[in-house]
Image (cartoon, rainbow, N blue to C red; front, side, top):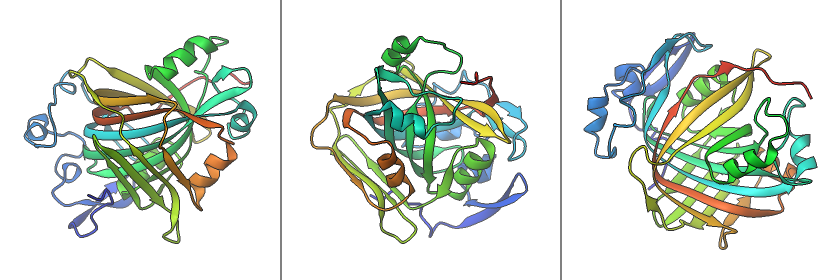
Length: 307
């Protein structure tokens, strides 16, 4: 089963902040424009429940992509993340000067290579991949060890993303213009299930930028709302710092510390270059969410202390 965007599906053109964007005809965005009928989603056999979303009100907000509703709901997702150890100096060299790497020991920090599959979403199916550096939360002073423990337990991560290819045009426009993320459209395959992870990002010439192949750690099931993790991502929009907050309702996940048998291929492309620039030492953790849900809020201005 491929996770590439189905280019044979009929498309329609919608306006997104003055830009013409193609979306699947009859898809959730075409029908609802982010104001999705939860009862209609609940009838989708891919979605186990929408209970997580019912208490989360959507708010109409102005954004660089025009008026929209926040948060963006993802009703069925799966993700794979490799967390890697790297020298702090290599991480710091790729960060804006206002941000600092989160250190697990003096001179060493963490970054992640991630793949995402969004099967049912307010902006329709798409896939993406990312390279992100774990950073100290803005204005947290020297509480590094507390933040590190929370990061390794996946309770609340803070990150700065270096690269974020996506498979759909609407995800690229919203993510780049609306959130400030370094997104571009690419062929992104992400097959993630209870047995195996097989993911790949293609470069501009059709070759491999980056690829991941590994067995999925034995997943453990959770009731809806039992395990909800958080992520804060820092970006700049029109020169001003913003924070994007998201919450993942984890329904089934497996974790392996110091995993073996992980095949991460670095080819030729932006993601591979980003990983190489961070001088990875070793993989310290593999996390695979085989079923989850996500609420992604629009970014808000934030104060970041100059360093």
